[in-house]
Image (cartoon, rainbow, N blue to C red; front, side, top):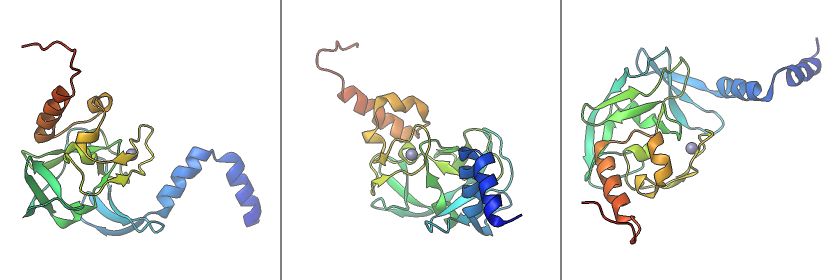
Length: 195
Ligand SMILES: [Zn+2]
C-alpha cells in the first residue's frame, strides 16, 4: 500500500480529535526517568520540558514530595510561593518542570511539602498544577496554552482571578487568606455588612 493511500485512509477514518492526541503522544521525547514513577520529556517542536507519569496514580495519592532548595527574596519564573512572603526554589530540581494548566491534575500541599493527585492520572499523562493556586501575583505573566476547555488565557496570579472560577481550584492556605480579604474589599458599597 502506498504512503499516499495510507495518508488518505488515516485522514478519512481517524477522527480529528484522535489524530490530535496521536500527534501529541508521538511528538514527545523522553529525556530521562527522574523517579520510578515520573519521566522528564521534551516537546521537540516547542523545546518545552515537562514531567509525565510512567504509571497510573490514584486520586488523593502522593505524587512526589519536595523540600526547599533555596529561599528567594523575590519571586522568579522558577520559584514557588509557599507563604505570604516566602518564595522557594524546589528540590529536587526536576520539579521546576511542572508546568501550569487551567485543568490541573495535581495540587500543592505546602504544609506537608507534597504534590498530591487531584484525580486519577493515567500513565503517560503530563503532570500539571494551577500556578495561581500558590502565586498571588505572577512574576512573569504568560498566555496559557493548556488547551483545556476552561482555559483562562492570560495567567497573572490569584489576585487577578474572577470569583466565578475560584470554586474550580484548590488553593494553598496563604492564597485562600488573601482571596478572602481581596473579595471582601471588592464588596459593593451598597451591600449591607453582616457582623
Ligand atoms: Zn489554560
